[in-house]
Image 1 (tube, rainbow, N blue to C red):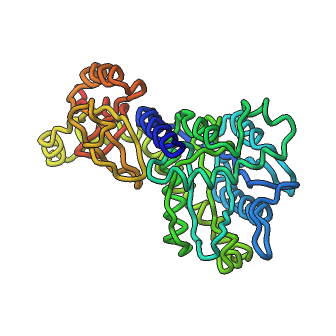
Image 2 (image 1 turned 180 degrees about the horizontal axis):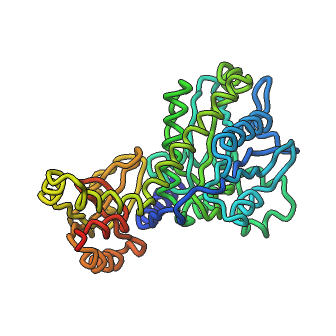
Amino acid sequence: MKGLYYYILFSLMAFFFANQPVYSQKGSKIKTIVIDAGHGGKDPGALGRNSREKDIVLSVALKTGEYIKKNFPYVNVIYTRKSDVFVPLHKRGEIANQINADLFISIHCNANPSTKIYGAETYVLGVEDNRTKMNMEVAMKENAAILLEEDAASKYDDFDPNSPESLISLMLFQNDNLDQSLNIAQKIQQQFTDRVGRKDRSVYQAGFLVLWKTSMPSVLVELGYLSNPAEEKFLGSTEGQVYMASAIYRAFKEYKREFEKENNAWEYRKQIVKAYDGDSAEAKVKTTAENPTPIYKVQIYTSPLLIPTTHLRFKKLENLSYYKHNGIYKYTSGSFETLEQAYIYRKKVRSKGFPDAFVVAFLNNNRITITEASLLKKPD
């Protein structure tokens, strides 16, 4: 009976999450980032033979912030802790919310009873259908820090870090910035793999209290396993910490530049106008002949893993398709030549159980912003 109970519960959980929205981050620039060094003070975190998680992640967090401040001096870098102190989990997210941060990165290390497991992985808040049990185990270890807090029951709505039911309810909590969170998470993993040579344990979704109520794109990074002797030695070394911090910084740099480029509608408009009104008659004829016309679709779901469009979660929808952006699969329904048609169809999609579906635009099969699409109309 217990197995049947969890099967039903996880199935309902997956269905609920399938209907959750994917939003874009508000604003056009990344101005403030909060870097969270996990654990601290009376909470040592994961323990290796010769190291403690709280010490390693603090060093990596501070180094990451230094790289960002050095190369982007106008970006405000805030730390949840800069020394060996205990900061309650709920306070970490509150810090980011209170200063209206644009990005939240929580840095951790992992551990496992097996000394053979190693590699880096990055998490966002949510449900991962294929790894629910494994991800829950990781989240439970990180959430256990609330047992060291006073009056935790009232602060976390009676959340029990040892209860699967409590964790499932947390995993179902809506994350309005899932799309962007998955984006930065994928970039971090790619940097760990391509630039530092770490084993890629991929991007996953799970229920972490530290990400629970953050109102901006947020990720939790597991640098590696202190239970693995070789990985502990690497992460405990100055060289290893420099490499991991620089990888997170490079991922931030790529994410920041890409986000701001996609939101720079004014520069895009100048390019379009120049194409029609440039000095070259040949260029004008070529551009007019191409007649760039955007296509509008309704986006309904985002996943780090490829899911068939024939999946039961999509059975109520028509004209399904997906596109891959920054390593993330994004699913859409419908295809329209005008924004008005797309908005009408969006209402239909929402009535079928996807209440937060939203409209996206494409040009030549490439995703563009709605603002950019509106500028593609030939100037009079």
